[in-house]
Amino acid sequence: MFTRSAIFEGKIHDGREDEFFRLVEERLLPVWKRMPNAQAVRVMRKIDSDADSPDIAMVKEIDYPTMEAVEEALASPVRVEGRAITDEMMHMFDGRFYHVVYNRITPK
Image (cartoon, rainbow, N blue to C red; front, top):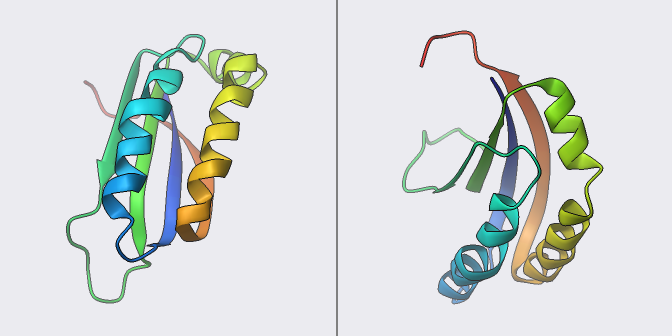
């Protein structure tokens, strides 16, 4: 099992938190669920963290069965569709997002 995460490091503009997460829920989540080979999609909103940790606003994870499935999803037009919405969302966010792919080493 491979999980591709998007880590949103930074801060949502004051007063726009609800709008930011509404866009994620209503527009991005349906696109992420349509990614080719996606087995599960999770979106986590930060509630608390260690005092010295980076400011992470949100993490998105999509599980795929193989690394080849991840690569197929990355080449998909569905990804381009999601990226356009993400670019729109970033107008409410000061920071960056980046991706990490994990290989699960513990059993389910």
